[in-house]
Amino acid sequence: MTARRNCGVLQIEPTDFCNLTCPMCHPQQGFRPNLHGDLLKGYMDGGLFRKILDGIERSNVCVDHLIFQWLGDPSLHPELFEMLRYARRKVSDRFEYFRIDTNAILLSPDRTEQLIDAYLEDPLVPVLMVFSLDAISRETYKKVKGRDYFDVVMANITHFLKRRGELDLDTITLNAEFQFVLQDGNAHEAKDFIDHWDRACAEGRNGVGYNDIMVKRISVGTGGEKQHRSDKLYADTIRGFGIEPFQKPHLELKLWMERAWEEHDDPESTATDLDLGETGVASPNLANA
Ligand SMILES: C[S@@+](CC[C@H](N)C(=O)[O-])C[C@H]1O[C@@H](n2cnc3c(N)ncnc32)[C@H](O)[C@@H]1O
Ligand code: SF4
Image 1 (cartoon, rainbow, N blue to C red):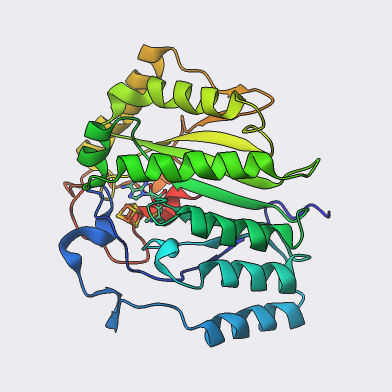
Image 2: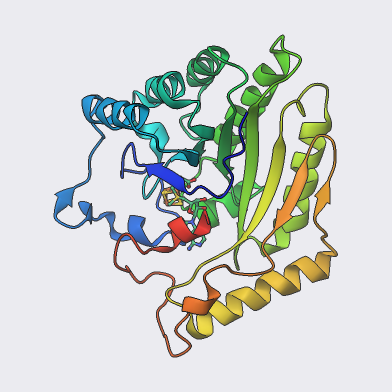
């Protein structure tokens, strides 16, 4: 496959609705009816989606990867895996891989089968599933995700790993990222989180494909004192646990020692993590940088 690294990312938002209101997530606070200007929250129309993909197919656009995600949770869109299937059929020669970011609450065994069916149409075209988990205990999950779905999410991901491990393929590119946005409520679990997914991916064929853990910095408002405190917490936690990035055959550990958007910080800002910034410049996109 031709390398398309650094060719930019295309982000498509299947829906801006979410089934969580993680306290760190600016756009989803306050149950606002609209996140994009005056447009009410909604679900992307399948016809519009196909039109965009058909346009890309006709053009000479080449992009690093296509992410299904923006301000909501893409898994709420009932046709998510149809969209994935369509995109891979139409433009897999233009994108290095396809990525879905989700809290995994709706990744039930049935939906995992839909995902696997879409993936198996062409197993050489990589799909990266990014699971934003942020906790490895029920109590912490409730605190940082705002609702009591830890058991559901863990069962869904465990099932996903099991089913992926059963696929009768030599090369599996149905990849997984386990994401942890480090913050006050979960910093104490950073090491346990890493150890858990390290063990889970090492078991049997669970480590097939590419897997990584991403320990991310939280983005707080537009910089300022709160951001500096969060950055210090990140650095202190990583150092305190002696966590080092690693690359094992079944799992890679990625850290964010630098914040890519630091140069844009406003040192005077007193914005809090609950301030509702201008949609479109909120942290989640930067979190994907
Ligand atoms: C807005 S969510 C949308 C996709 C999906 N709902 C999810 O959580 O993965 C996209 C990403 O933004 C991250 N995120 C949300 N608020 C953040 C913050 N304040 N700082 C850093 N990352 C944040 C989430 O952890 C997630 O990885
Ligand atoms: S981070 Fe993702 S799961 Fe959490 S509230 Fe925001 S959109 Fe929803």
